[in-house]
Amino acid sequence: MRNLKLTIEYDGTRYHGWQVQPNQPTIQGCIEAVFEQISGGKAQHMVGASRTDAGVHAQGQVATILTDLSMPLPRLLNTLNRLLPGDIAIHDIYDVPLAFHARRSARSKRYRYAILNRVIHAPLLRYTCWHIEDFLHLDQMQEGLMLFKGRHDFSAFNAAGNDFVHAIRDVLDVDLLTEGEMVFIEIEATAFVKQMVRNIVGTIVEIGLGKRSVDDMARLIASKDRSQCAPPAPPHGLTLLHVRY
Image (cartoon, rainbow, N blue to C red; front, top):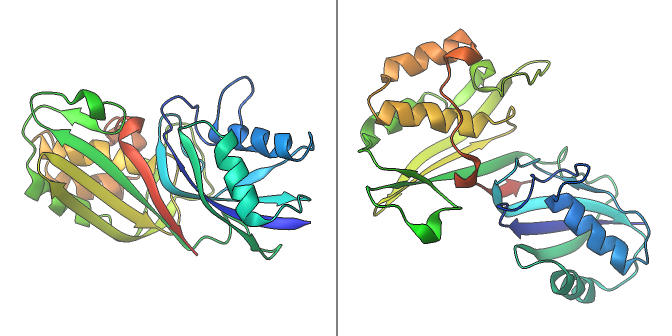
């Protein structure tokens, strides 16, 4: 039995997220199906570092899979990429110890959210960023974003109806970057509650639009009240950049 570690890039536009769902196309389901094809029909089960939502993308998703396949890794990598659809690619594949687990062994994950801030939309970017026409006050957004760094209870940014034992998470780094008319918000944490990044971005954008103040953000974090949070930012602007081990 081998434990294989894969680094995966995908465009999540036409998928219902990472995790296998009945009668729905998913990233995990697609890759598992290709492994089953290669292994002659033997059931395969992967574990992903992040269970990205429908429409969310990844540049550096990591997954592990236990398999009896004895195929050399270079050949296996080429075979997987030849059989996978064009919106999923395996960048590398390694043998790792059986104890290694894509999710439990991860030390942190980093996400990037992309915003196009201009009046005219960009057809070529419509599936990879959130188009916002109105002017954004980036300095206020940056100030509000910095409040998330460190250990906090993120109950106010947890997806509605999603109950964790607790919502305390450690945010290691936050950043707001610009490239021309593009605005990127990056957040790295040891773990996330469900839709945490999208909920943070949705609320930070309201600061940028002048609908909230930076002080409102501090009160929102302290409130632990999901009903006070803004609607989540659209999923298609979010990309899992990398996972650290």
